[in-house]
Length: 85
Image (tube, rainbow, N blue to C red; front, top):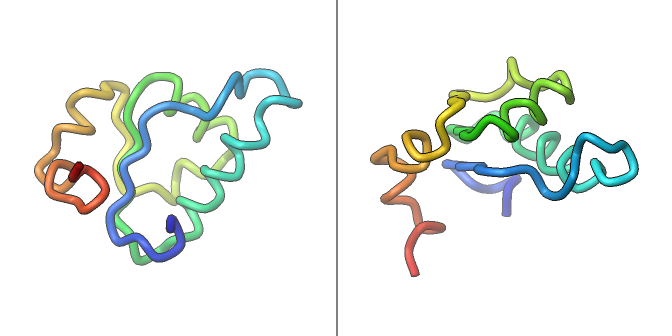
């Protein structure tokens, strides 16, 4: 899904990324989001920002916000198919 998405909103790492043996999921998400050059990618929240910075892929993300709520409340995020019940 990440590879074909046109808008990606990522809020929160997958697990305890600070420990290498638990960072596999978070790193995979970061790589998938960064690899999708066609998408608008929004990362919100302090832990997510730390995670993307740790992977060295922050420069490949459209927008990074330390505030999770403002990032996820953006008009594009609210209107994306993934945000619909």
